[in-house]
Length: 117
Image 1 (cartoon, one colour):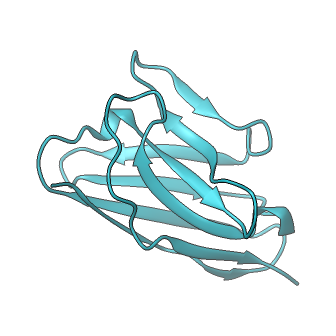
Image 2 (tube, rainbow, N blue to C red):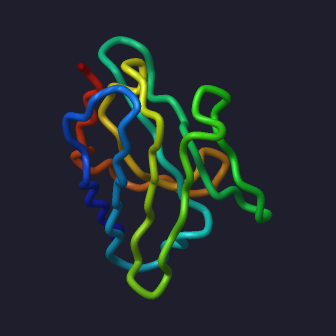
Image 3 (cartoon, one colour):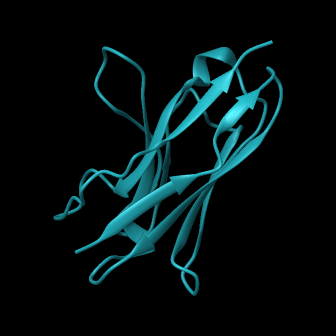
């Protein structure tokens, strides 16, 4: 069973940066087909960035040029570097398999990102 543990969130001022980490453990996962999602109260989870099956990388329009997804396969960690943060980036951030994957893992606890003056 795959387990996901997100960390690195916090309170940051607009324009600031954070780097999120997702530690993946278990069997059968592939960092190269995983991504980051975020959720605010009400709407469904939104895909923010992902490594897609087939090798391409996806970024939501709202984060293009500001967020970068990366992975360390040796350490089984997925990262999300977030720069030029905006108040609308405030959300709980989660990692999981990319949405077009044939698998979906149990969701972790997520990590809260709050962007506020």
